[in-house]
Amino acid sequence: MENFHFLLLSSLVTSLIFISPTLGAPLQQGFTTNLIHRDSPLSPLYNPSLDKWERVRKSFHRSFSRINRYSQASYVSPNDDIVSPVKSAKGEFVMEVSIGTPPVVQLGIVDTGSDLIWTQCQPCVKCYKQKLPIFNPIKSSTYKVQPCNSKACHYLDPSQGSCTARDTCSYSYSYGDHSHTSGDMASDTLTFTSQNGGNNATSFPSVSFGCGQDNTGSFMEDGSGLIGLGGGPLSLVSQLSSSIGGKFSYCLIPFSNQGNNLTSKISFGTNGVVSGRGVVSTPLIINKSNPTFYFLTLEAITVAKNRVSFSNTKRSPLVSDDYGSNEGNIIIDSGTTLTLLPEDMFTDLVNALSQVIQGKQVDDPTGNFQLCYQASEDLNIPNITAHFTDADLQLTPVNTFVKVSEDVVCFAMIPADSMAIFGNVAQGNYLVGYDLEEGTVSFKPTDCTEGQ
Image (cartoon, rainbow, N blue to C red; front, side, top):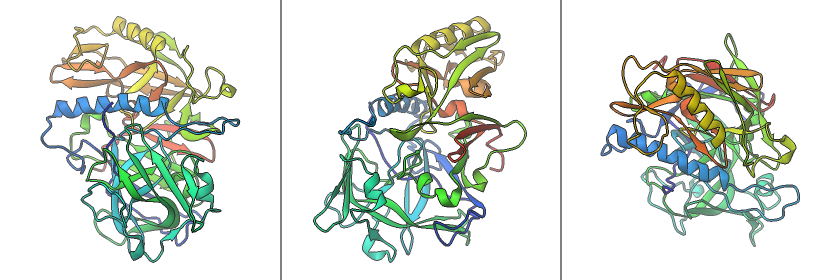
């Protein structure tokens, strides 16, 4: 598994038009920020020494790391007393956010598969090198260390939080590559600023986060930490719920456009509502013992007239028996490139596609994919339909096949024996909206490159 390199939330903020004086203020509008793919030339993680196809291969490899991130992630049933350390892996989209008063810019990765917000803080016991100034809480007039009886401290798992001699809360998180962060649980103001440097900004006071003084491992110097968008109580989405109504959405540009100077978008509050013609919605399934992950129910995928039903003989430990074998069977994740399916379903799907695609099959030069074709203008790849509960999602060739070299395209889904994930290639050119209050995820066909 590749080493996990870190940052903090995702992009450069564009149209931030929601002004809220307090975190608990009624929702009035919403705000929208850019999401920059980590392999875009606009990303601080962009490596110009890699050619296009090397970046593509690395993106695929990160999907395999995410399998380990989910299958090994900490979870707890109501009767469990011990919780394992958090496991994590690389996300795909970066953005900009500021912490404190006056605001200090931090940069990092958006991750719908984790919750804790944290950044490197002075004084450092042991900090990794970063290009941005390390956040100094002494210089922020709104910084506060959380007491032991705070909600934020209560929300930490027993293995991740403890009470200090000064009656303040400390945290300690470990990751799958043996990296770790630890320090004080604190609160401060988060501010999003417009890309053009204007006065459009929105600030949220008293957001809980980890102020890490001991952070080691394979973190990259371009970033400062992490902010999670998962469903747990410490995530950004959950903490801002009273202001954004539990709503956010994103529009991801297709994978084939990721190397261009284009940005995806993420919106919160009223800006995050997905409505209008063509919208389909499916129930969002939350595992109460581990609310971080966003589960959907995939019933089948249709190729031409061949309906391939979801089946998984190896149950995921993250899915409670209360859900049965079919409800809440796939995680939707913006940070995983590929879509992962149960082995038996994947095999049937590949066979169905092979029968209708009249192209020349070739071996995958990257060694990752089982179904590949020689790229040509007359390669007739059909649309397929993903049948979620109450929502049929049409997937075009840009959602299902990726170019892995100049003359080879491959099916962008892979088999997995422990976890099904609906990845970001399949979500491209859809406006994907999460409504945590209504318990739904909505999809609307959208050209996500518009307005660039």
